[in-house]
Image 1 (cartoon, protein in one colour):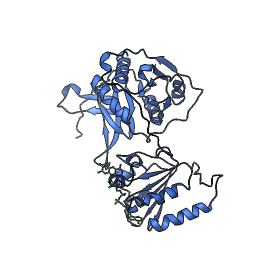
Image 2 (cartoon, rainbow, N blue to C red):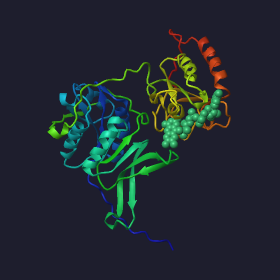
Image 3 (tube, rainbow, N blue to C red):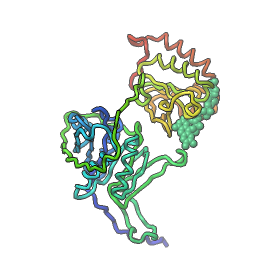
Image 4 (cartoon, protein in one colour):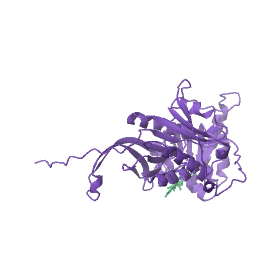
Length: 372
Ligand SMILES: Cc1cc2nc3c(=O)[nH]c(=O)nc-3n(C[C@H](O)[C@H](O)[C@H](O)COP(=O)(O)OP(=O)(O)OC[C@H]3O[C@@H](n4cnc5c(N)ncnc54)[C@H](O)[C@@H]3O)c2cc1C
């Protein structure tokens, strides 16, 4: 005889069905992660039958809302004020919690980038609204949750439209689906470089709502004396079309000189690295690819002397084309690289460079890796 399941009452946590992305800009440039969040935010809003909004704070940023609308926002909440010129934790927190507190019903979902600012701001907003927050997600979805645990009898029921915040756990060996169905907004931060932005439509129409700001003296517990921007030479690994990445198989820090020579054969290229070589000090952290480094999605990724540990893989496996050079035929990287070359990188790469230099693709004599 089949066991009869208790009928669960459907519990709808009240919300206005809105998905809100907390955008980031620097010097009037929208950060790529914001456009990526709008891409996934649109998908979630469609599933909820709700709207997608973006909050953007700063100074002299009146040109940004139209771009955010082109990338999918239906409404942009704009706070354009000299007091918000540079990111500061407490003033930015104040503006956002004041905005959300003024809504008759809370938004359903709040998304932030898993960036320095996003990670700083998200827990403060979550703590204020006493809601759940999942950090560093790599996938998001909407679905139901059935609460049958009698320890919380008052919570028994079926919750539709929960945010499935999915992130790697146990050293990236498992994917955990984390839910917080009790209260809205359901919050998540999302790793940069993972989600895809929508194709922009500059004819799209949307609403722009100006936010009144009302900062309090306690929002100014710190003062910015000077902003110093790191001047990085060359292309950053998250933006490069071609990433030449080196691992412990290089044997010494000078091995990166050979990789730079290889990178120099390509237009718009950058040097990546495994954590092991960063940890031993062969190259600075900003080059690290992987779970605790950056996520990259170049057109071409050449992994040189990298074993392909899961923590490295999660940062680069969305690359269009992966070529691995490794002297160990059983190295895990060969299981997911599109092309593998088994051998000593110090023999293979110089030959590779010679061959590439024979190919003249464009006027700079560098190889331009084209899409697809
Ligand atoms: C919580 C946590 C987070 C982590 N985060 C990251 C992260 O963000 N990014 C990351 O990369 N790692 C990360 N790691 C470390 C990761 O587990 C691996 O230890 C690391 O990626 C290994 O680096 P590697 O491949 O350079 O070195 P190794 O594993 O030592 O591999 C070196 C490879 O080089 C090959 N080789 C040696 N000599 C040559 C040669 N002459 N020519 C060709 N091939 C050669 C070898 O066969 C070997 O496969 C993390 C680990 C933990 C626990």
